[in-house]
Image (cartoon, rainbow, N blue to C red):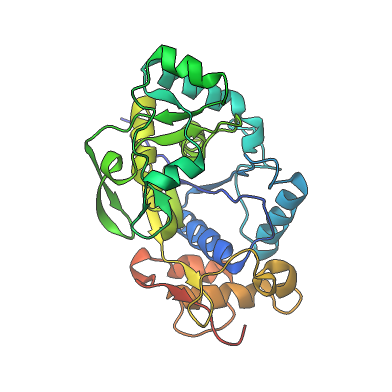
Length: 318
């Protein structure tokens, strides 16, 4: 009697091409890649270019060049087209529209006419992270009231977050229990300018491309319960999530794309890929020494239990 083989894990890296990748992006890409490769899984590359004002194909090409230079190759994505193409979010809008139609049919979304200034006037940032809880100002508008408001302002669309608590086990951060309604309120799935919200797009993309392991920064942890709600409503299982510590400079300051001295355009002129990979692996806790290392060695060494529990700090020599 034949026995079925387990489906290989599918991970992904989904950069936004709004600028050259810095070491924080690459550290996340490295850990996601090592986790997948250590499980003999497959890696998918998705380009999150929803915002045409910030994201360009030229910048996307640079991001892929950076990944390729480091050896962080992908099994499916641009240049490796398979069944889940296209891989640019800007080319996947029909899929998001279809998902939005499903939510509309369930009365899960409603028009919101609130301006940013109005929301800031009635809300305080949640937990000091700059996220505002939506107070539900437009949640119970009648059709007539919504029609009247639409004459002067195009609405965004918000998802009706239920009152129940989302519970999930993060591979790195452990058990999570978050009530989205009391913490964040209803959230946007399509902006007033017609662009789809990150929460909806990433859920549709992960589900339809078979991604079942998501490794990303701890600063996005709060997005996860919102995405789990959407997955449930759309009938998809949630992937495993792993939210890693942030990479900081030697002084503990969070990295950003404005840190031009720490992006690959500058660093690749001074260091080999193996030197940068070893440095990132050491910062993450996978290597005891700050030295050059190749991906084959790091894959053999990889284990989530070895990744540091606090923020990852770059060496002072950078």
